Image (cartoon, rainbow, N blue to C red; front, side, top):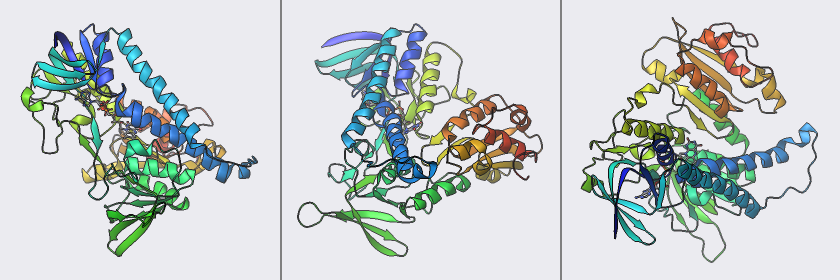
Length: 471
Ligand SMILES: Cc1cc2nc3c(=O)[nH]c(=O)nc-3n(C[C@H](O)[C@H](O)[C@H](O)COP(=O)(O)OP(=O)(O)OC[C@H]3O[C@@H](n4cnc5c(N)ncnc54)[C@H](O)[C@@H]3O)c2cc1C
């Protein structure tokens, strides 16, 4: 068994781990990234990227089916080649995961394929294909991510039951899909299959979709789901399913609601009810690292755990589960290890995007939170229906909502639901980072005709000065 020393070991190569690795390399630190699966983590392999590839295809299919003719484009004989769609998706993920190892190598960071387990705070065993390797790192960054929660009665080993990984790999579009969980992942993937032609039913235990989000932003998404024929059962619990007698039939998913019991036919059931941290079996006990009651690793604003030489970043530290948050934490941990005085508290704006149709994106304080905090705010709204570019895209659902301090007009937050929300939020994040006021956005000339004019108008609307809407 080989024994080696290293300055910093990063465990996990998702957007938290690989970014930490690259940054360590840039700072001339001696580092190794250990990964038990493919490089790139959930994000590149089975999360952000493949889901967005399928969302793109599904959007095109829906456009061809429902909108092309009305815009003067006749397309006959549409069909979906699931195998080709999957091949395209895998091509993208392969390019990006190849990029991760290339960047690590280019920054002189070692990559070790294997499963890491702490033996002590400064000793890690990595089980590689060739056998165990003992490494003595001076510091460690834990970035091991999360896995999907399993619901009793819906074991992921059953070929009818899908977690997010399996739902991204379907080569055939199921006729009937039941989605357990009306959160981000359930609605993103449920919308993919609804657009591709599945009858989709969403079963959500809470009394709303996308719990925790501003209801004003969720409403257009709920309306669009209904328009697509997606059935939504709120305050409903999926209890399990009965298999048909004989092969080839559909299962019946048993659901209890306040109004009584339901049986919903399903070819496949996607379970998307949340995540658990990958902190078990990591030997954190041996290293002396504390975890909380849910298994997450608590960290301070410099991503340091209770053990001074061990850091943790990304999903394993708890929500929000966002790739870009994991990456920023990875950068902060690497820089702190290199002796820089940086902190996650330096980050003022952490945007979030939900790739439903329409998309939702938020940054900063939303109206319900601001009101709950008892703040005096002005809210500017601008509907995409009044935005020329949205109309030319044939997609004018939703609005931009800008929240500012009532007296000073300082920007507090922005919520967007509608076309391009995930891109438009970047300007708002920059404005928040720069301590902008509604007047700053209102004064900035935005190119015409663009969706970004809706951000401009919403900021002006907070001042009672929107041009293309009545204030
Ligand atoms: C379907 C889906 C869509 C998503 N879409 C988005 C999106 O659009 N935008 C967004 O911001 N976020 C999105 N997310 C969330 C995003 O993927 C995560 O927030 C992000 O991947 C977290 O990064 P991480 O580095 O913390 O962990 P991960 O990406 O989970 O990486 C952890 C890595 O650690 C490895 N590992 C674990 N234990 C060990 C061990 N003992 N030894 C060695 N390696 C180990 C794992 O194999 C894994 O590769 C999505 C998630 C899913 C599931």
